[in-house]
Length: 421
Ligand SMILES: C[S@@+](CC[C@H](N)C(=O)[O-])C[C@H]1O[C@@H](n2cnc3c(N)ncnc32)[C@H](O)[C@@H]1O
Image (cartoon, rainbow, N blue to C red; front, side, top):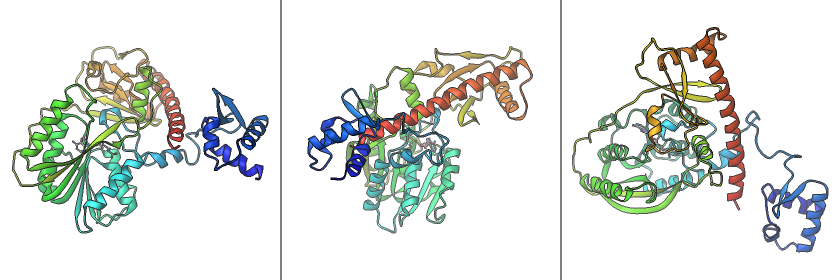
């Protein structure tokens, strides 16, 4: 056996730490004595090193992780995570958990199975599934309803057949069903809260044909207290709208951990976690009859935020009134600034009026002035005391978040490698 060949096999396996047992098991009957010789040789050449009884390629000699500024920084993300290359980094206020590539492939196959070529398909809040449908160029007509502007702009870059793949930029809570039309199947992934469930399901029930199917991702049973009751209420709502639960697949859908959740977990002291730890249950409902009901009332106290993107960091500023007389200041709400949770039940959320894509929260005395100061930064060097304060704040925040994002990419890389064995 040529040593160059054996070495290449070992190095490929050891892109992540591997035990001798693992390497030996993966080498198609290679004599373990020959394997040990090869490992010793590679260790001597400092190509491999051993730590905690595991072998891995020497990262100092050949960096494995990707530099954000390299030509194709998203190489690994592309393989496992839905469209991180052309969709903007998710912001925590959008509850945007994207499915893993494996789940998107699973879903698009299901969609193909359940629809004939002439059927029309509706996706509600499923931008990455829409991207998958476009890229796979599936034969059916597909419409996506999505209100998130940066997402819609990202999807427009796909260059898909505009006749077959249509995006309706609209609010699912408000859009008239007539504007959307009728479909044989609706696939959707609302944020996992009751008001969203009722609004999405109501719209889907209006738009699906009798005999058609609605697929929805649901929070699994340990997601939060009272989910058992919530789920029964949801199924009752569906039944009232002529929808019969036909299949329920526990934990069938996988989500890729977004950067803001990575930061939240790190801030909470959780490091040993997998990128695809979050799962969703897939429920399929069949529309068995038409039962008209008014759109559920939305007691959503709508809070508007304005977004400013600076040096890849997305900064949201709450549109709220404040006194112009008070001296401008930025208040830190928590030690380290990163909110150590993504749960909406956390009360500290209410105080924040500035929120970054890395899950940092702050309170500024006057959001309008803060936005103005952010705009000033783009056009002039900071001169006033307030401008200098905001410039320093932005510099340190963006520096930290860029570094953390690189750590996130590093971590993803290693964890995704670990999961592929
Ligand atoms: C939980 S995410 C699901 C993302 C999905 N798993 C994917 O990978 O494409 C929910 C999606 O619904 C969208 N959304 C939430 N509320 C909406 C509304 N009222 N109108 C339109 N879209 C909405 C969000 O922008 C987001 O894209």
